[in-house]
Image 1 (cartoon, one colour):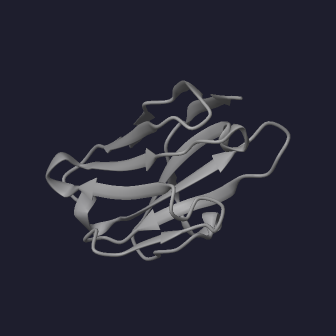
Image 2: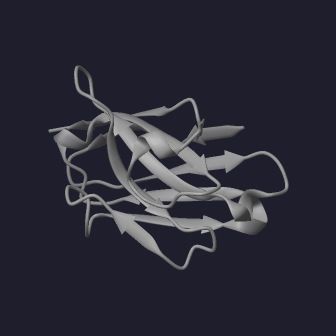
Image 3: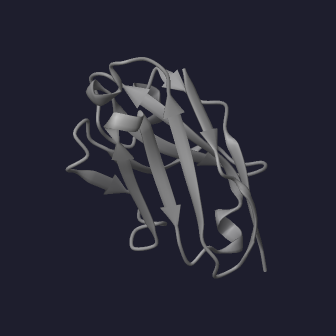
Length: 121
């Protein structure tokens, strides 16, 4: 089970950190992904982090502004979002996969409930 939190309202240019906590004792064997869905739009990838945390992959739209990290001892993955823009407004979801590390949402079988991020201009 995945529980995302940390969303909220922030001004453009600001920062926010999302967390996604996983239940269970096998968190370290799951690659984790972050995705987002803006109102009226399809869900899109944000980025992903490998099982060990030594590799990350980002969508072009957030490259250089967002950073994904994980602490396996705490069963938690983080999404640090800097230089936020109004177009980053969306519900953000974390997802887990045993066998896949990448940006294809269809390859992630386990999803959290989402947390809303609103960036005001």
